[in-house]
Length: 95
Image (cartoon, rainbow, N blue to C red; front, side, top):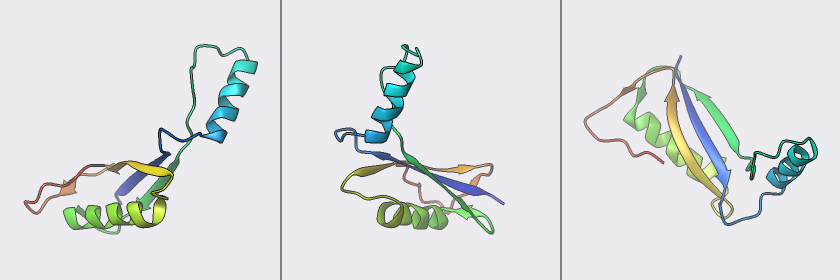
């Protein structure tokens, strides 16, 4: 069964306290080659049947309305993992 992956990240202009904590821990461990860490969320939605443009559109709508808080987060990616998309002649939008 195909899986649609949605990735959500804090808006670039906002402070990411979790990322800052991890960056501090890396520095304390002597890992100095990293300049920053941002922590986001990943959703994996398993689809029963083919992934069509309509299914992707529905997941994009869910990503914008339910999986992310548009005030502080951006949906940075919606893609299919392990399958191809069955198109209906309408080009799909990529976030």
